[in-house]
Image 1 (cartoon, rainbow, N blue to C red):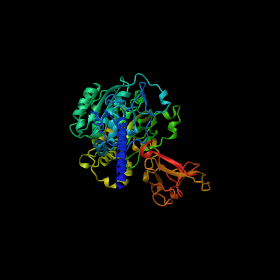
Image 2: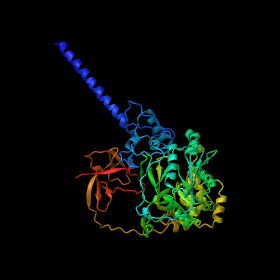
Image 3: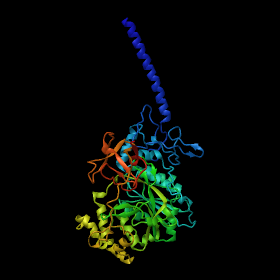
Image 4: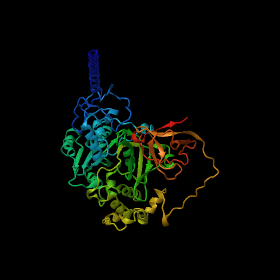
Length: 557
């Protein structure tokens, strides 16, 4: 009896093993056919090798949903099946599987990419050098027409240790979306990069795959963004200089709206609206139309656009006067750039140059505009992946030069926040002071009164404050909804870090606890979202519509 039982037990084990073997065989073959990347570029110039068999794909940081495939030439591209991606021609569609890690090499590419570049290089490499981006312009922009006799443009792109795929995608986006009669040249300035693929590989790619009007300039030593742009401008011969960062993607009809105001007035400097390319997913999303400002720490910030700027016949598509520029993306007449003093060559590497040129434009007879109908995407990284040679604080050095040349007595507002910098050396500024006199520039007080009257000043220069009247008898708005805010990727809920009635407390994301009433938020008829005891302040800034910025509300009925 025991031998019979043992025999059937062995038969059962054998049958189970055969069944699982067949199931696993079918599963792996199906996975290989539907989840493999074939010839998707990883190193920029070379296609990725096929995925080894018997590798489980696992999701990493990447898109959380798959968009519908886009038709191209009557066919639907499928970069994840048998479609072969050409890294030069490229027609790859965005997919959730762009961020998947299939093997150890993928893991290494992604991790080193974050370390060296502060964004997801694995996805960047897989995207190739050409991709469609959403047209984020206002619908009224698409109805506009532009003069046919616009000035030609020299696009200057400086780079230092940039990811090759991001750099080439920047270049190709310009070539793909710019009329050839307007694109006089592209000037690439290598600021003495250290990475091997930015040497010989880039040289060969420029020679073999880019048009003859693409020039590659190599700096013999690290000059920094400021002097690097001056070097690029010195090689330019187009009527207008267009400066771009090396991790951008220009949108549809981006250049004509920038060139038109310059063609009308050569002392006009223009900036596009900067759309957001996520550092983690590389998804391209629209940015709100905002304008540039600054604080007394001499840091750039985004401000809401005054209603007065939007009340004209063109509405939200009209050019917007901006007190300052972000600095990475702008265009100006080449001769005017030279007449205005280019950049301050005494500034080092990066930082503060955007405020300096903004003050100089306004105070010396020019104007600075943001053009809502021109859109350029930019990878917004959470940190700068490289520092300055020697580790010096170039932001402080540059800000000191800016303050002493352009801010008159208002530099005391800066020193009130940074008193330790009063005795710090900032180099010789004689030539910049003489430039200000030569250009017959206005005072910084004029700038604050006429260009940035919203800026509040403390001390003897303080502006009179308008009285604020509060109706203390006003009734509390009616609560129309209660619920929780949770993050789609982590499923965590917003909650006050301390007690909900504690003013100034942080709002953090924690595991959702449906028994915790402190996680319940209220929506009122007057729009604010409130904690049980206090209002939840919401600050308007540039936000992405995916990744860490995507939220949903779960209403409790």
